[in-house]
Amino acid sequence: MMSNTKEFFRVASLCAALAAGSCAAPYNDGDGPMEDPVVNHPIVVEPNYHSLKLAFSAPNAGLMPDDSQHFDDFVADFIQHGNGSISITVPSGRDSSATIAYFGERMASAGVPRDRILVGTRDVADGEKRVELGFISYSASTAPCGDWSTSVTYTASNHVTPNFGCAVQHNIAAQVADPRDLMGSQPLASGDAARRAVVYDNYKNGKPTAATKTEDQSGAVTDIAK
Image (cartoon, rainbow, N blue to C red; front, side):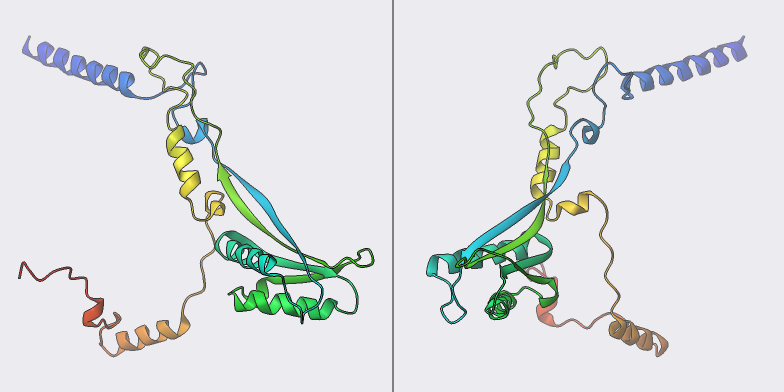
């Protein structure tokens, strides 16, 4: 009798655990939104082309003050948000090389690596002196939030609401530094061969391999507790 009672309680406990798990576990049988906000509110990463056209007569004349400010703002935007290279397209003709040199040197002085500056010429109508700059950046976005088509008080189906997780996805899209990171991991940079050699030599000679820190680099915030 005692053995049957123990077996009964063992089976009852197992059934209760399974029943509790089935109530708490999320599921989707095709009649409601998926439980994953990433699926319900996907972040879309898209390329955007930015261009700027400037009137330019000759390198010795330079740019007008307003155009000069527009140029600086455009280059700063590329440095912060641009991907790949920035292009300089100038009218073909005898001044094309000098014009390219003017804009290329000015970009390099602003901090653009020279290997990220692409240059070219285009055929234009006689008298046209406009230079076009361009680069590509990536933006991340999601569909607008606010889908309250289902009642948040109805929980019998154990489904999430359609708006669940939308705000979080919006925040991720707005805060990501490089939207391309959402598409896949970026390649790792090559290791520092010189530093690796120093660490290996210290290890062979029984010396500390960590970098030496000064007092200014300590992590102490205050000395009050000492």
